[in-house]
Amino acid sequence: MSTAAGVVSNGDVPFMADVGGRPFLTHLIDLLCDQGFNRFVMLLGRLSGAARDYFGDGQGRGIRIAYPHATEALSPAALTLAARSDLEDEFLLMHADTYWPMRFESMWSVYCASDAAAMATVYNNRDGYAMDTVQVNAGLVDLFDPTGQSPAHGADVGCAIVQRDALDLMSSDQGTVESALYPPLIERRALAVYPTEHRFYSVSTPERLAMLRIFLARGPTVIVDCDGVLNRGPVAPDSVRSVAAFEWLPGALEALRAFRDASYRVIVVCLSRGVVSVRELEAIHDLMRRQAHAAGGRIDALYQCPHDWFAGCNCRKPRPGLLFQAQRDFSLDLTRTIVLGADERTMRAASEAGAVGRLVTTDMPLIAHARDILQLRTPV
Image 1: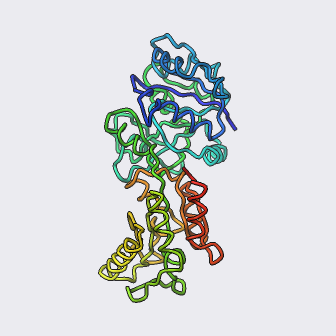
Image 2: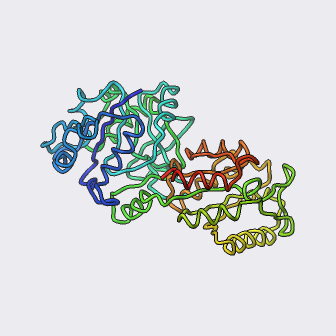
């Protein structure tokens, strides 16, 4: 597994912008260090000065940082080619202005299985959050258009695993690395895809920077199931169908109060299985909110899957669609968010989303998890 990352700046981007009292680039390096990286090649060209003044060679942080061609006015593509000898046989290429909470072990596994020369991370962009620049087909990129003018249906995240030898294929030493490298790889069907539904964040514009600051503030959050976690669950595969059938589990309201006292956001995920009327479902949710509030707790948001068991939707566990919906709505970092559920399907959904899954049982009910989480202050 590679332990080297190339961090490239595509233009005059404010990668040293203040985020939470320190430069954004420190957050990016912390993320990469958490994923096992210990050597960095800063492909920043004439923008290197501020980063070098702040980080030096990285020894004080237990890492190594190089700044090749730091005084030259080279394009990102030319800078990467010129620094070829500083890169390992396989390396991670990151944009200096972008933060995406990667799980590199998962990325590396997909990359190795692909037998491709490079692998791009692609956000599905079904919500229109970013510009569509990538078209994916059968696990490979078959179109890359950085202008967004082509009929693409995905957004390049700016995080790729690249074989150093693939740099020999670059069509130009001008522009970005992607614009020079991706087309010849696509032509050879050698650009694999790591798909993600987790949003990425950036310092590229004031609006994006504001969103990034919210994201990296990481307000502590728990996501909890209903049946078997908050309320007594009916016999599977049935569901609570009325207010009269809803019954809190012992300690559940106390747990909600404890989370609120500790300033945790609580997001509830329920399944309606397509058998409960909209009116009855709203009545159940209203009851939950009112009684949680009366007990000193709070439910900040409540999501439900409206589909039937066999609908094949993306929001029914073990699919993680509702978790990603909450991620987008609240700018969550799911890799640092706890999901509490009463069955293995919830644990699988949490794992697929990159979240921290905790199984609620009769021996370890929600209140016991709440006490443990608040004592340890995980995952903050």
